[in-house]
Image 1: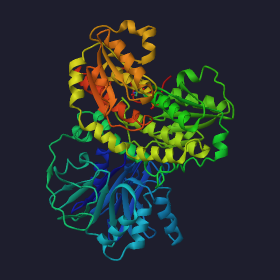
Image 2 (image 1 turned 90 degrees about the vertical axis):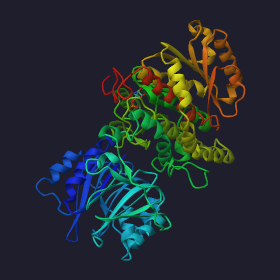
Image 3 (image 1 turned 180 degrees about the horizontal axis):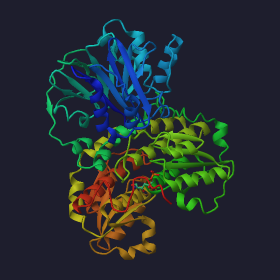
Image 4 (image 1 turned 180 degrees about the vertical axis):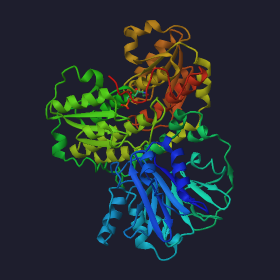
Length: 609
Ligand code: AGP
């Protein structure tokens, strides 16, 4: 995610801006910049690459001034480049802005501003903000910013700076973090606490819709109606490392709980206003183009491969196009049957997994059209594929993939629905029903993550078993595979996922008294069959932890424990059913004293074959 900093006081701004951005590096970024106001001139210095490149660029000519803003950019709209880096300014350099989030309606705003003569320099959504302020500025900085915000849709944390108002910064947020650090004769603004705790531990946490006017000796906060808000000072007692994890003990837990926002961001602007269709502007496909596909391959590794298995269901069930899913390291050597009527989709959080990159190149060599689904803008896989759809999960630090997986499922669902819309293979009423439920998934993820206590109990009670099985049918089986990998890779337990209907063909021999079996039973179409398989393992005295949709009253008659997830369409419930499995693996690893964020033998991005 992007990082934002701001400073206003009696000292030089630039040193804090660089220092603060350094403390936000953990958030992941591909470019950095600062803007400092001095003597009615806003000096902007920004560059693609690491902060070191920015420091090198300003060495010996550090912008002087006691008010400034800074930014580290995690690219979403517009590739990593000097021009796309923040801060962004208006046509005349009167205003400078830094932004974290996504301006969903930036295209229509940009077209309108261009029609009014504004000249844009970047490909970003953010650049509409300083030009809007230029267009609407009426001498009252705060009132003008409010007018800008009335026209903006999306998620954001923004800091505005105006050369006409050199005594204040104005900042606001919606669905993205923003804190204000309270100094002595100086004040600080940042995306996150690590940037400011070396200067002050007294902070205001800004809430959605609030607007703060930050001067060097005062902070004035009002709500969206302009009414004053009384803020309680939040004393930060975290150390620097804990602060990077947002107060969570591990990055993995933080990223599990970031999933509502990651999914909401990944969905944003990709479903039209009346929920009747998916909008993937980055593809621009036609009915004829989609109908030209005789087969789709989905190729990936690890968790991304598991997302591909779910993607198969989405594309086949909605778009009615045959899909094969391959492990990348197998795909590239099995001489797959590919021609120019094949679409190969590669899925990769990092965009750098060498097996997946090699499979992509092999598919291209054989004449396939290619599409990448990745979380890193400008990554090797993003650049190699013909087209790319980005997940907007923000950087994933923990080796065990969580928010990348759920946002990959979101992109696969959007793609399946998009293809179905072009092929007319889903009735309009059904499409609207599905997309309406899809919009509700972030809230249902939040609801599912609210109560983790039962899962902590299971982790303590069963965490020392050396064998754990995950079973399910249809999409439940695909999610079981992901749950099994999570448990293996961070708790080191030998976990195995099995198609529930396949157990009796061998593996049932391993089910003995007390063996924990996590049984997913969310798929209505195969529910009775799954129940029979649960009875099979119970007959061998297994301990069954069931995963079911809320309102299910049958499963608890046979399972020892049941974890419920909110009810939704069976195509969408994998987005919820995986959550208890992520939490179970996390708390089990804690129980076993494993290194959750950096498990033994593993790397976050496997760039060797
Ligand atoms: C995820 O929990 C694993 N750490 C691993 O399987 C990962 O999904 C796999 O290496 C693929 O990585 P990628 O998505 O960056 O290509």
